[in-house]
Every structure is written in structure tokens, then in C-alpha cells.
Length: 100
Ligand code: HEC
Image 1 (tube, rainbow, N blue to C red):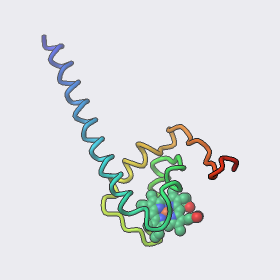
Image 2 (cartoon, helix red, strand yellow; image 1 turned 120 degrees about the vertical axis):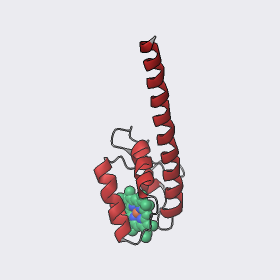
Image 3 (spheres, rainbow, N blue to C red; image 1 turned 90 degrees about the vertical axis):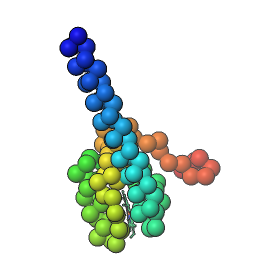
């Protein structure tokens, strides 16, 4: 009985943690849409596969060029969740006629 309750509790805690993460990731995506598009396309960002440390450095570099990020923590979570170095590489980009 206790074991069953513990198991249930673990499940609830795990799903809560996941829900929080998802909310943070969505906030990060909004932050990207707000702060990352004035200078270049999102393709430049979405074609990268970087570690957390490398994304952190990248955000420092962009900040040095004048990027103002309000919700850096969420943006970093979003970048790692979608464009981390453990994610599969994107398909090679083609030009309009699909040749190169
Ligand atoms: C103030 C202008 C500006 C803003 C805003 C900006 N960037 Fe950049 N970003 C640049 C420039 C300039 C480059 C270099 C482009 C090139 O090499 O063609 C660059 C390149 C990049 C690259 C390619 C790798 C590299 O370092 O050259 C990534 C990834 C990147 N930016 C991420 C971001 C992210 C994430 C944001 C939002 C937080 C952002 N940028 C917002 C100016 C900006």
C-alpha cells in the first residue's frame, strides 16, 4: 500500500517537473522570438547543435553585440531542449531550386 502510494507520488512529481520544464521552454521560445530576430534569421540559430556551455557563450557573444535578453534562463533552457549537442543534426539546407 505504502509502496503503491510512493509510486503514485513519484509519478505526480515527475509529471509536475515535466510540466514546469515545458512552461520554461515555451517562455524561452517567446524570448527568442522577441530578442533574436532583429539582426539575423532564426535559421542561423536553429542549425546549431551546442552544449549548454557553448549556448551560454553564444548568448554572451550576442549580448556583446547589443542583444537585450530579459529571460535568459528560459531562453537557455529552450535552446538546450531543442538545439542541444545531443539532438540530431538538421537536414542540409537547400536553395530554392534544391540544387545547392
Ligand atoms: C544585435 C544584433 C544581433 C542580435 C539581436 C542577435 N544576434 Fe546572433 N549574430 C549576430 C551577428 C552579427 C552574427 C554573425 C553573423 C554571421 O556570421 O553571418 C550572429 C550569429 C549568430 C549565431 C551563429 C554563430 C556565431 O556565433 O556566429 C548564433 C547561433 C546566434 N547569432 C544566436 C543568436 C541568438 C540566440 C540571439 C538571441 C538571443 C541572437 N543571436 C541575436 C548579431 C545578433
